[in-house]
Image 1 (cartoon, helix red, strand yellow):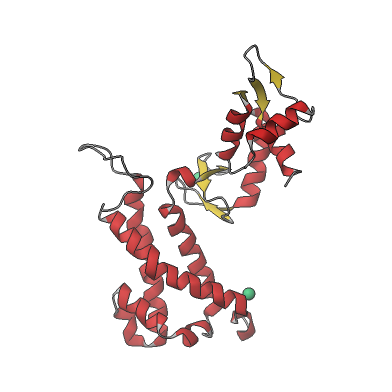
Image 2 (cartoon, rainbow, N blue to C red):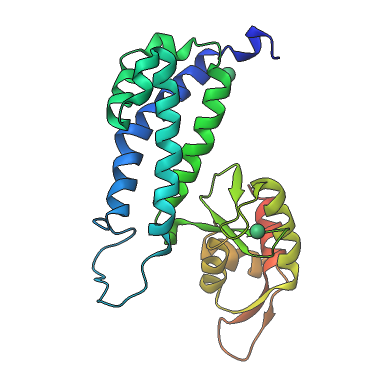
Length: 240
Ligand SMILES: [Zn+2]
Ligand SMILES: [Zn+2]
């Protein structure tokens, strides 16, 4: 059993914990519920799915995320007062919001905070438009592509559901980038890197070319080169 002090949160964790609680009930659960009811579109609008289209994969996941989120709220509400455990999610959330001190100083606060972080992160990924997700890397277990939000600390495989630390997955990805070549302009190279969450301007790529820092092979077409993505990523790494 953990000593009581291990479950005490410092001031900045309390602050963050409270923000996550507000976010869960105020933003995430309503958004997930409307996705589940197919009232919402993820991403830019202007695209109306016609009848017979396959449903967005996210719809099938929304229910799981809602179940986990609601279970967390019910559990915390039940710790404030046993009868609150039976509340629907909105009332449970209000009970939590109105008992700030009790929640933040609870003997289980550190564990509750950790499990909420996990829940909120998964919700956030589901609620992020696909074009804002980056390629984190490849799942070591099932080889599926892992995508996530740029600053996520962990990434969960949508296929085998395994959770991985994002930095390690990214490091393995950057290793493999040495085997990836693309042919195009500096702007094409910058766009390709963006898919991996690596931000570089086309001007900087051009500058590296002019200064001989980057060893891209020129093609017969003006301003087109064969770039090695691994070399670009490595250069970028020492300019951060
Ligand atoms: Zn802390
Ligand atoms: Zn996997």
